[in-house]
Image (cartoon, rainbow, N blue to C red; front, side, top):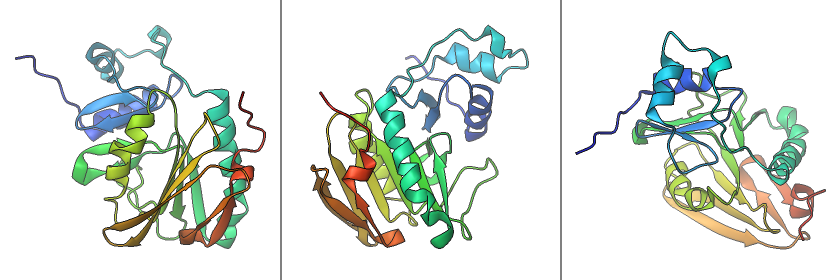
Length: 217
């Protein structure tokens, strides 16, 4: 039997800190994954990065990076919520901020996180514990994970009120909003003229604003 080495959340946090210029990573049951991949990082690389001998100049591994459409969509989302930050007493974080789900042994990095400015909680590794809304922009390599694994995980976070999945391949947004402790409603929108009401921040979101400047063949 081949035993897979596991790593702690502390290992994951240090790995992310040292590999900040090389990619964004997530933590699942002791394994570290590039956010744009379903394949875990090679153990030999993790061991080197966590070692006292680590030198970032020696890193030659290339990890998949988000596409321009992905980045444009995230930028549009940030712009949409920027004006709400003060009015709704929110903090907004993008991509490199980890949400910890300690009960499941997970550390996820959504493309965008909304959290209460006054009530946000973090663990000793500065990972967010109580997001109120998370947004994921689908990529070809991670869309199955975003629609299934992450959906299940995020819905178990007590503070979370909304999970929004945005396609970068077509105009389509899937919105999950909590209506009771263990009950969620789903809404799928596929026209730039449509909108949805994000109840946790009492704001109408229009797809034309999410997809502004993003063109499809």
